[in-house]
Amino acid sequence: MQFNKYSERDLQSYLPRRFSRRQLLKFAGLSGAGLALGSCGTSLYAEKVRPIFEPLNQSIEELILQAKTPVPEFPISAIEPNALLVNSFNFTPEIDPNSFKLVIDGAVNNPMQLSMSDVRSLPLTSMVIRHVCVEGWAAIVQWGGVRLYDLAKLVQPKAEARYVYFESADEYYESWDIASALHPQTLLAYQKNGQTLPLENGAPLRLAAPIKLGYKQSKWVTRVTFTNELLQRKGYWVDDGYEWFAGL
Ligand SMILES: Nc1nc2c(c(=O)[nH]1)N[C@H]1C(S)=C(S)[C@@H](COP(=O)(O)O)O[C@H]1N2
Ligand SMILES: [Mo]
Image (cartoon, rainbow, N blue to C red; front, side, top):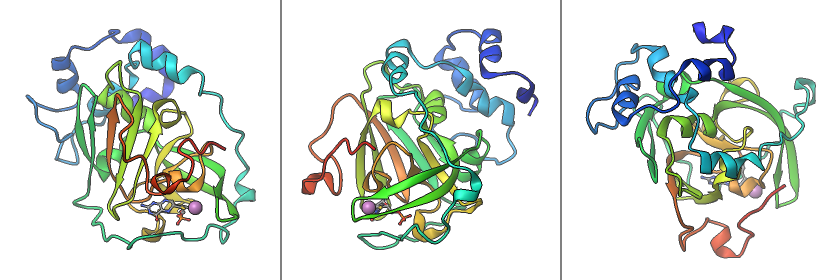
């Protein structure tokens, strides 16, 4: 990982401002219109991560600029290991992490399917934040995972993308405004309190962010879809009258 000695900003100045679609496909180890990001687990790390140093298009960068202020995090010592209550409204899906593929599609230039090893090869972001459930409980939790922002840099949302939909394996679904989804503390987490994310908390991938209420934080996310418009189906609880934005 030779990238570590440079900041992301430094690196951007070394790279062309825009890759052509063909170049991007080449960097991602893709050919033609294929979707899978390198099916062999040993394909070059550097080639895979390179596109995330590519800036997003300007109109989306401007949109998310306002949402970039980080929420203060807690020290590791503040973690409340037993306070996070499992809150699952449907069944608990069984997902084999070895065959699992996260689909990212919709209003993006490079739709992709990522295996968990693809996801783990991207930079790991860790944060200790408070999870707040409208049912009257909260918990300080450490989450580790990939920033949605970093995934967005891989798939390159189109300039007109405004919302992000999350589909879950238990038929739960949610939609977020793109600024909140691409906030630096919005993760697709695969670790909880320093350990592999347990199945009941949404393994292999769940949303985690300090800027939204608990019901926005979908567990067992299988598909992330960028859209230009908010669809009629907005969210599992939202469609029942709960607030859509649900900011903290
Ligand atoms: N797919 C899915 N995601 C979900 C839920 C669910 O039932 N299914 N419950 C939501 C609610 S209301 C809360 S508070 C959190 C709870 O996360 P936890 O079970 O890991 O504590 O998950 C949210 N995400
Ligand atoms: Mo909740």
